[in-house]
Length: 395
Image (cartoon, rainbow, N blue to C red; front, side, top):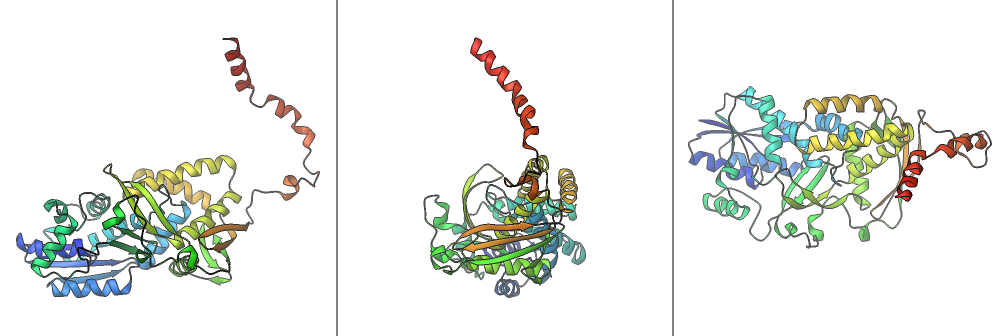
């Protein structure tokens, strides 16, 4: 039998390879989708797959991830209870590319992933595989065997599978262009202070530069196109934003996250570039949208984030929300000046040719706006509420 493993090179997917052989799969291929992982991890995945006798494939999807997925996250001000969806938005693309590989290099008797039965990725990956490669059976060996992480490590040691984790250093790291997640071990305790060693992208506020950094982000139709005066493509600007924001202590996130299966878990993330770019985008969007648009856009953003968290990239509602967002983004053109300083992020100014703002009308030192015209409007404000209050007083 022939299997394709959606392969990260980490513990979960590495132990799948010998486990597959034990249940009768004699021809195993692996596919790694590059969405911005460290090159050392990409090379390590190829090396481990080779050591385990798998036929390895690498797909470079960084540009597509930046221009279609991360850019969408910016347009929707991506936020799931404080989390910019860094891991979640990568999974649909990984599943899509893995499905394409299965169709190109098959036929396969199964597509295999390393997701556990406790996490969200099992939903995201399997939905994407069924969407793009319907009919190919899906196996999830970690879930099927009900393995704990310690049991996976013990099995890897038993069969000689190459892994980095140990029973004393058990962090589980997931990294892509849009962010980095760290979980496992003592981090599962909501009352445990994360050690500085888990952070790689961000400096602590104490160690960040003593001088603030000011930068200007330029947007065209909702997409960042330049930082200060340097034009960049999406991949370049996200990479640069990660560097400058992380250097100034921006983007550490520690939240209690409600997973899809109902578990409440503690999650740690580093998303410096995402936090910087989304904050700037939100500031510019507030300048060019009417009040009722802003209220509705916030609802749309929240609905989109929930769909993406669940991995439903391509759901009918997803397409509807995207159409509305695209209409709004046509006006989100302009510049936002930001100040980064020891973990804090401040909007210093914003400008746009599409601004719904009149300085003459808004200024307290200008008589362009006839204030006396407001008398009748103010007198009728809240009339229903006043009538309700009088009725309550009579009871």
